[in-house]
Length: 327
Image 1 (cartoon, one colour):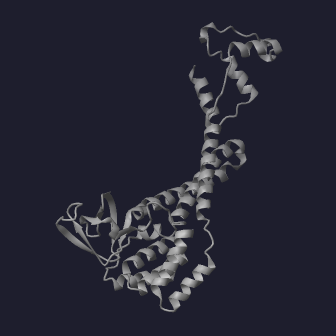
Image 2 (tube, helix red, strand yellow):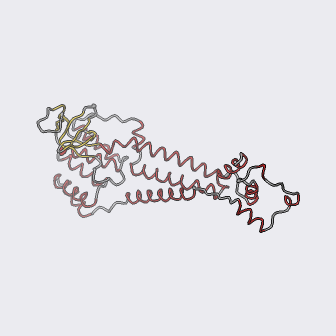
Image 3 (cartoon, helix red, strand yellow):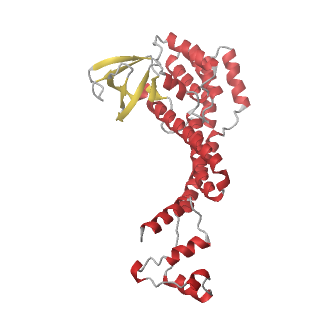
């Protein structure tokens, strides 16, 4: 295959040159299977007049040219995957309606000062219907009034994951941490930006951006007149995808975030009951969950210290066996 043929084929594959019947005829006349010196010279008459039907069939049979592009099938599969991911994320955002009877009964118990009874009512709603920001917020309020600061901070944080911009949740979480004697956590500007949306919304944005990128490329082939607009859309979709991926990477630590639910937890040097204590953790203090061995879990605190704590004294903000809707 000579350099001219390779150049033409590259331009055809890239879409810069359309594969017209005339171009196909030129490629066939190059006779790629024979060296240039053995090609017979054409007369002026044969070059000026097109070959008849029989000559075309013979030429096509001697030197068939097949152009196969993997792009349509590959991008169709990617588009289907993007649509599937988007549908799954949309389904995860659908939450069941809260039972008004049980919710009202728990609120009435809270109003009467029966905080333990109110907490049990809200916990029963979560056990039956899953997590939701209003129920978690009311549960945390009841637990805080009852003096259970560890579980209260845990459920405030879960509610904040579902509704990050709710001023009531953020204000009560701050008050509960102050009551527990905890120092305010340092949040970097990147973490603040990543917390602007929930993890599910970031995932949905990334899936939609990936879907747009998958659709844009075949549309550039099918609709060349709109190539400039499609290029602009592809750049915007790529930027949105990069933002979503970056935010999810920054917030990946939330998956291993845990909160101390007892008044005080002791971290030891090894996962045994008689281990030498290293440091203590207060109620509501956040740690990073590393691994579990038997009845103990290895955690890291904000000071960078590692120790083994009884697993029953901790609870993950995002449970390992269930996903917070919209988190």
